[in-house]
Amino acid sequence: MAPSGESETTQFWEDLYRSREQVFSGEPNGVLVTEVEGLPPGQALDVGCGEGADARWLAARGWQVTAIDISRTALQRAAAANAGIAWVCSDLAGSPLPAGAFDLVSVQYFPLRKDDRAVRKLLDAVAPGGTFLFASHDPRDLGPEHSGYCQPDDIARVLGDGWTVLVNESRPRVAPAPPGTAHTRDTVLRAQRTRQDRN
Image 1 (cartoon, rainbow, N blue to C red):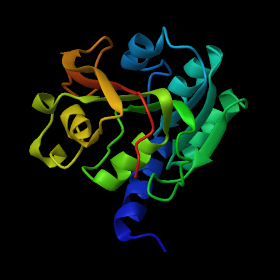
Image 2: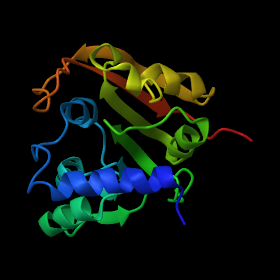
Image 3: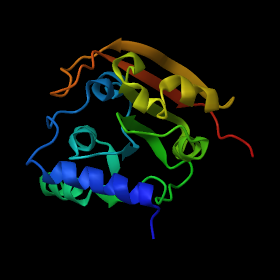
Image 4: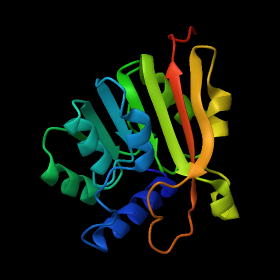
């Protein structure tokens, strides 16, 4: 049985996706497009894929995509639009991720808690030479209730010697903020794994 926190999280996202026909714009996240455009395609993991816009964008550019989300409703919508992607319904804690399997791990606006185990799990999934891409709303645009969630600096502190940070910044949003929000800036971390860490 899942802890009540996981059950509540699942229910929150299910309720959100069931409340309307489309929750997000259907367009890929601007940070993803900007940061991944020039990368050679390979294996990609899209964490918190929602209705699948980022996963579809990656697949259209030749990436082999595994997309994970906690909401069955979101994944059903995503799969109906593209069957060539591996859609996985699971929370991050319950999903075993193969070490070094992905050339890109993309975490776009996913509420990743400040938990070194979860962050390390995602980082360990990146293949040598691969990219870890994380985007979030700038903390200046968020209330104190979001202080328990990761920002790029939190992840950068966990990176070992086998990583090179290519981008760690706050930048103006390239797309309008979701309705009802005042997000004007994004925080972005893009890091490349230069070698496998030795345990």
